[in-house]
Image (cartoon, rainbow, N blue to C red; front, side, top):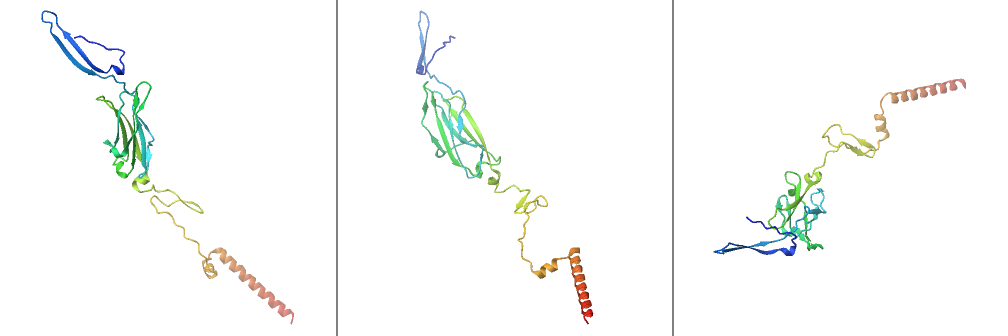
Length: 227
């Protein structure tokens, strides 16, 4: 078998090539086969994804672009949401960009609103952009997105402290309901007297009784001395 190697090919070297084989005399038979050859330049890296973060809230909009590295021909881009190819109405195709070396770069945008179903049982969303040229294996890049916990479950993590105007309060145990402070109310003098109990109140009343008795005795002495 004879092997022919072509070197220093350019993109304009693409086309139809013919191989002809002939036998010697006396028959001089000839066999001809034709074949097409395409000269390609492959991307030197996987696609690039811009504008997409790794954390989103349910209800937020995701907007981002996928850009293929320069190649010839231009790569065909696709977006996948959780292994499912995106609908065309979610996508925006941009004009092909050309370099000085006859290489082409393609960009494809995606825009959609997040809901709970996007995160599924794994509580995460996988976005994948693929770049494909002819029948060659695809190049791809994947971004994994996680939701904000409180927006996904409509629940909030139980706080371990509660605050009011007077400073922090600590609930008595895990899972306890938040403490509630009753508003202050005005007490009448009668209610105040009834609520005052204990040794301090008793001492005050005893001093008042002694002072009253002493004053009464002094009054009696002055009355007797004037007679």
